[in-house]
Length: 292
Image 1 (cartoon, rainbow, N blue to C red):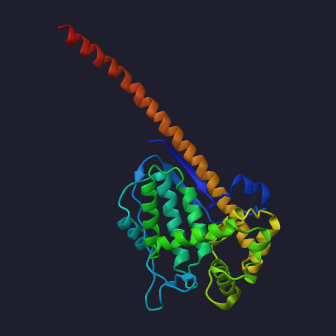
Image 2: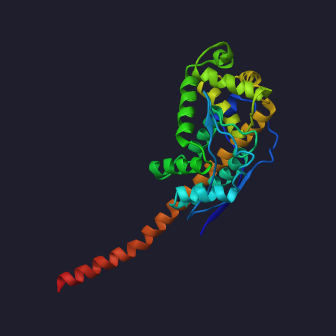
Image 3: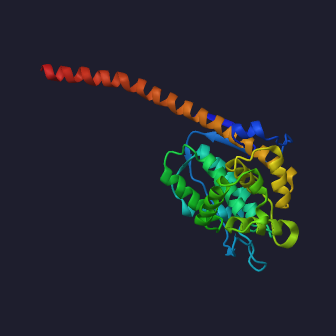
């Protein structure tokens, strides 16, 4: 069986973002290394519940309730989604769920809508071109449930922020604190918690969610990200680093998918070539019987 080995740095932005954004070129230590085998394997997985406020919050397990292990999270996923997943998707999903499990069960973890937008963005990029839309959604549901969170909440919050961002511009996006509104309230809550007035745990999904807001608002000037990070009390250097990683991941994923397509096309052609002599022999045999 043909295989391709790739190193995935959790990353990529669109070509337009690369033109307009100056991102850190520091090589991050976080990476996905996976082996792409053109076959199907099962993916295991697991997770935790959350409380809610105006902004839905997911608290990590209580002091008396030890968090689940990575193996338990993977097992939960396997229980939720029992069908085979092509290995090019399966391997990256397993890497993602391990990383998200570690984020999810940090003591300071709190779910927020920007984090959800970031994860949904990554998931849609990763699963683009998946053979079945129904299966793609079922895998998403199983993945989030394995982490003991609400997949519908992820979708709802991501859509809410996307719709809001499309109505913003470079100025209004960073001046949310001066206005009232549901999304503005969500962003204010995040800024307060990130500023030390509550639990906040920065993650690379949060960084990707920020970038998605800028992208949808068509606010791609390099200074806007810096301003948005400042008002949200988030370290821009960390955001730059993780966006750089994200860009690289998607670049590698595109290459892997292209190799997969070439492999599938090549195997299809071989099957057709092998079938041709058989069809010819069957036709000759049929003629011989017809002439009797």
